[in-house]
Length: 132
Image (tube, rainbow, N blue to C red; front, side, top):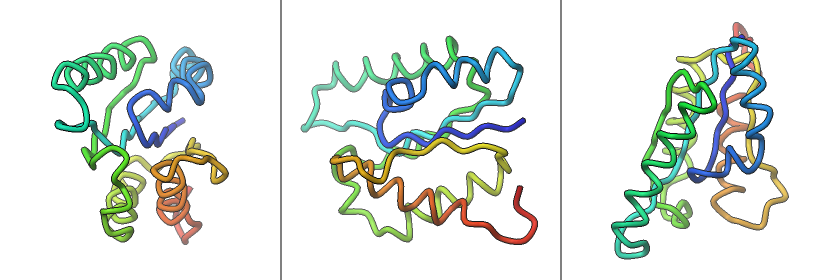
């Protein structure tokens, strides 16, 4: 089974459904992770940015992530990116992975990045002929 986890920020997937991801990994499912944003200086220190990158790599090993899609959009600035661009990037990933299950953020989240990723994920996973 192909599992896709779409996370606005690198840590949201672990905080939101880390146990479920680990369970899929132990069940020999193919788990793919898309992290939409990346912290950038000057909003975050270079040390924080390097540490976050390493944490993502480490968690991928622990959770048996098959492949990461790191989109690199700016953290807490997704509202500065055209929604169509985000929709299209997630749609490309969904077409490539053909997931059976997709985990996305809650639409009720207070964080704007999370809500924008939720909306883009709905567009990318809308039912179309031939999709799983």
